[in-house]
Image (tube, rainbow, N blue to C red; front, side):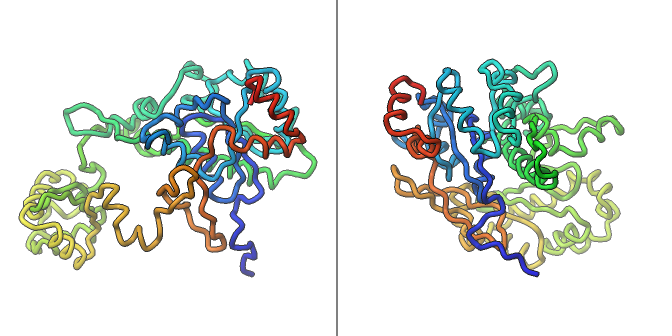
Length: 406
């Protein structure tokens, strides 16, 4: 029987998330849930001091990072460190299914918002705690940022040229990967709750370490080290787990990545090059022998690429079904026919800038056509709306604002 969920209803429709986290990883987790239908309320301090409100790129007075990363959320301001703010926060908590926070371990406890207190006010509450290193261990109280996670997990040690400095990419990859794990954790917790008996408190705490999230993506490295005594190092763009896999310069100054991981794909590269004479060469017969002779393979392909234009190479590689791509800038990506055909970049309505381009909602469900989310909210933009739902009238909201509580 086909699924009868309406096309406008996302898989997380009805889930209510209160996002009190700052900067990037944990708010990104909440945003991913919002993309799939959850209702997300963004809570921040009344002074608008969240780093993401000031992180580049900034266009005039408007931080684009904030607007795209916190898209689709209602925005409220509240200082939970003040007694009135704490009381209002606890009053609001039963209205939500999930609380997302990323403060240093123990911070909410010091504010009188320990787990027991939170779940006393909402026994079914899911609390996602996304920190740099987790709630336990000797580093639990340390501050963490994306580049710290990338360094400590071993990821940065793989990035860069052999014999030269490790490198970070010019984007906080550690944060966004942790955010993806955060969204997955919330969805998993909600699915787990659905299987529990009715009437039983279903609350849970999710302890998500951003360092562990990034380490989780480096699946074989621990086994490679512990069982084989090998420490994987930097090799530039070349992969050391398969050959051929590298980036090559073209005659007209572009860069092209070519991948021949499988035996069949590798043979098609030599076909495209017109070097079928090499197909029976024992040096290139298996993955193991190709890795031993990777310098020779790379040299052959590099010479071929340098003697042809990008257009010629792409035509030839397409003809022989060799996996490849020009190395795109964001300008190239946005102009790519595949990206355009699938509308992979959408335009967020924004009250300040009109529209802001941003990545589309991922993944796509056959029974869900998501509305385009609005850009991230202004500081306290929805205070009257959200606090009005709690029964506070305009005078009460104005008094809280006057005392710096909201």
